[in-house]
Image (cartoon, rainbow, N blue to C red):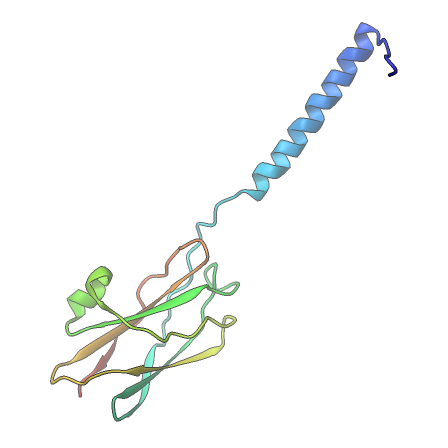
Length: 145
């Protein structure tokens, strides 16, 4: 084992260098741990393109993870028999079968099987990212069987 004796000024300089290095490392690490607070952009062109028997075919343009950049994580298409319930998102009926989001600008399509009732349906979609940031509600699409 080799033991070196440093003069007091040399030891102070070494300690200062170690503290500066540690501060730089911690600063770099904290810059990497920024929280994603940018929500995806809302879908503005949700449309009901066709109807066949009990199948409704929807389409829209993919937005993005951070507003219109990056790929979002998932879509959430819901419906209600009145617009107020659809706007109160938590009370709207959840659907299944949404596609995995594509790159922004991509044309997305979805088939939804429904049991038609003699009532108007109101549909909307939201987009979420990997940090669970969620877009505002899309335009609302109406379907009257």
